[in-house]
Amino acid sequence: MAERSEATRRAAGLDLDDRVAGELRDRLPLLAERTITAITAEVPSYSGTLTGKMRDKIENAVQIALGTFLQLVERSYGADPSTPLVPAVEAAYALGSGEARSGRSVDALLAAYRVGARVSWQEMSSIAVRGQLPAATVAEFAELMFAYIDELSAASVTGHADELASTGLIRRRNLERLTQQLLTGASEDALLRSAERADWPPPQTLTVVLLPRSNLRPVLALLPAQTLESADDLPGGGSAEELAGLLVPDVHGDRRRQLARMVHGRRAVLGPARPWTQVVHSWQRATRALALGLRPDEVGAPLDTEAHLAELVLSRDPEGLADLRARVLAPLAAVPAGTADRLTETLRSWLLHHGRRDDVAADLFVHPQTVRYRMGQLRELYGDRLTDPATVLDLTLALAFPPRSGLTEVPPHG
Image (cartoon, rainbow, N blue to C red; front, side, top):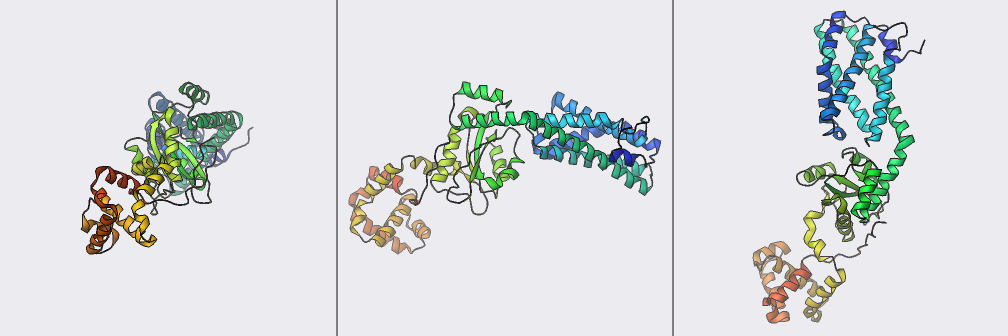
């Protein structure tokens, strides 16, 4: 005789009314449907994946698992008390293996079990209470229910681990190779071959997210299973902490705001969404933003490179921008350094506020008369050039953003 599991041991001591057991069995199809609906709503990794034939297949598996549980409760098995549990455990093991092959984490799988256990118990306990079962029997019923779920989830975890040990490592290496090719701008043909080899269905777009590696796992748990992770760390962009790179599928449009909420407080940098074969451009923009010294918001909002396009465009040729700045500020070389700094600050604000003296004063926290005085000095130094469109354009470009010091370039990936 096979060794008794915790669930079968508890079932041996449970006396469940046949009428209640029959009602539970009649409710299995509806219960399975509600369980899958709750899992897709509450576990992000399953959102949008359990549809069509796949949903029908999983619903049937849930119904079979719950039917096996009722067999334990009704004690409708033969001499061997483990008999009805064997196929359920084998199915749970196979489910874990399949989830590993699909790229979903064991955390997502266990979260699905927790949701399923909660929904199942809500329905079963309602039926038990309506059947006027004694409180002690309901309590034993609950213990049996969760012992059974524990055994199934343990079998799934084992299946998941075994799959990763045998084939998961190979797939992970293929995904790492694909990620490396994406971030080095490999040809579309090479990317398609690598995606097929890695069993990775290409999305419409990919968006690069950079964040401290210590924040990686909590964020990955919230992202789609297709998300790719760069195997190489990046310099910390001004901090001692290494950065990780993620390639997140299909977060263009409104989904970008959802992504920003997911990484809030994680010191993340968001590149633009790009067609998946061109994600190298998202990578380059995100790393360029760090190289410029741009940082996530202190209150926790991520650094969205889409909000810094002007600065990123102007920084494409740092030496050229420095030369332009030196040339347009040459008239200030004749005044003391402190005065030159104040006049430069005033000229920048004057250009950006289109000469509105009160707005410039408010921006600089000075009196409007101070602005008038400084602009008088600048007109003496520049003469008619302050009204020349070409000079105004050069000044606007050169002074659009304060110069950043101590920048460290992020090397190209690979």
